[in-house]
View 1 (cartoon, helix red, strand yellow):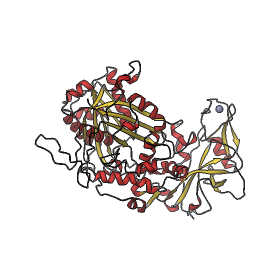
View 2 (cartoon, chains in turn green, brown; view 1 turned 30 degrees about the vertical axis):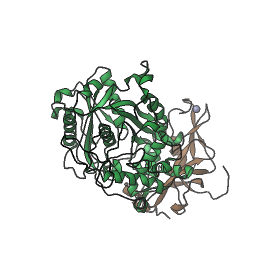
View 3 (cartoon, each protein chain N blue to C red; view 1 turned 180 degrees about the vertical axis):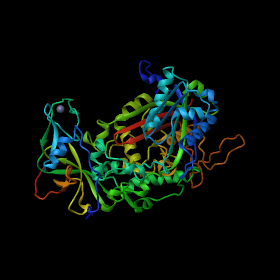
View 4 (tube, protein in one colour; view 1 turned 60 degrees about the horizontal axis):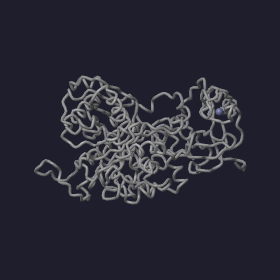
Length: 421
Length: 146
Ligand SMILES: [Zn+2]
């Protein structure tokens, strides 16, 4: 479906940036457990891969953004390692939902004239060093500030903190773990067609609900895989992007980091099972000039099966309360009407704090997803659109994608991208 | 029934906003911060009312029971101090007489499976050391309505 909003561009608002910036380069390292590399080394490789993808040299990149939670390396080191002289850089604190938001910041600083092209990276030893699951160094940290209101009662990891939102959704709407397990099933099917995926085995809903319970209603297989990796996205103006070797993924709109009231204690101010997308959708869709019904591929952040479901619901892909039906209907599968996380996402491919889902949708819009399909004499992949195990994962005719980034129930970001005309 | 006997909980550190809450808990009283301008309760305590940004805030005793609003059952814990208690119920409770302020707690004294949305609970106090007493919850002993 072609973006229908071109004629309603109001140049007096921020919407006039619709279609003016693009992702021109993407890069990643392998998704592993045990990288035996520093985050600085991982970051360097990911950025170099993205520069190669964009056909850019050190002199072509003059801006850098990164995000981390005190578990990574800084732009000034990495830029130097790559011979890049920076006109702009910033390293920000954050995990999930940073990707889309930092792309928005990149557009802002380029628009303001600070620099011309921005490389955004996330480098993490998410398995070997700092584990989001809350084991290792995180559990030894002292209890301070607002943490006193949960740590003393045995809440700590992301899954433990989010679980009450998931359970209350089940109570209010009759959502079942069996329905939501289909998120993992779909992503595992997608991952089986992704040579890079850490977990490539196809699973059934029974596999998910029969895996051991971590914290009700989350089973082990409802939780994402912690891995070591770095990822990079290069953002530049649309004209420059059109000179790059690969077709641009054109940025239509971004929302982020949009918050519920009192994001740090979100359940004190509004339904606990409502997520930030409830607010972000009112920025995303008008600025993009399209609605959820126009989207061909979604990238709903899957730290847990439930996070993908809650976001798809609150961004309006289905009615409130019908997320369980939506994710178990087949819509989110390859071959369905609107596949989600065609790489396998955080649940199966690897854990990147959101970058890999934007990289995947960029590849979808290029028509160049790196699956098991043969590469033709022109160097381009000959997609079969046969989604059987070990086959294709390119969505036929993908023209519009939506990424829905998640930090926690109270904070999220989102982005709509389009295939270039 | 969760076995809490081997758990040594992280000790909360009171600060300028939370000290009255902890001082009251030590006396065996649940006190929550209330805006004297708009009447809203809020928890945890802050410098201003998050509803009307008034700074006229006081801690008021909150009696009676509450209802489990949401919960989870922990079967696995990264913080090894809690490993001895799994599975255990961590609950979020809305108090009848402090609408809008939600309190975290554990459901004590009954099997963890008794934690359900909508269950009636009441406050009890768990002494952690000479300084800190933790407000906690058990199923309501008396029948009362919200
Ligand atoms: Zn007030």
